[in-house]
Picture 1 (cartoon, rainbow, N blue to C red):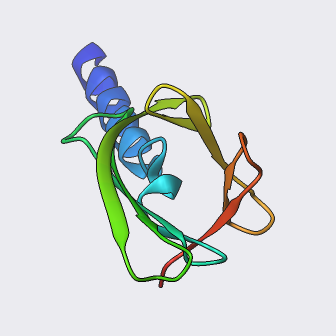
Picture 2: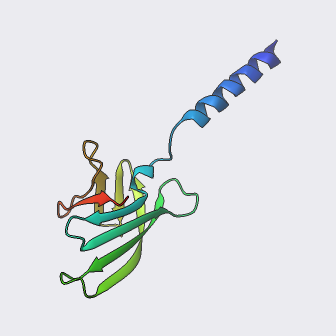
Picture 3: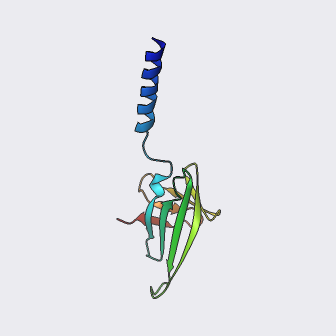
Length: 111
């Protein structure tokens, strides 16, 4: 009887854990573009980590004739993605835009 109860509990726990949506920070994964197309952030998970990300930042000069790219580390802390240990990004739940809290810039996810 105890063995059967334990089996049912383990099955229930397995189903519950498998039904729990995406990994934390999944909303950041993708390519984000600033409204003036000057900055682009390409965000990917760092391996199978729950809270580490790799961020490729591309900055294009205002005349769009040259660009500079850097790859930096990102770390998830609660619902905030911290890039290079300094820059804080969150997702606006109303618009789905990514917000840079240091300068107030908003980024739209590329389709």
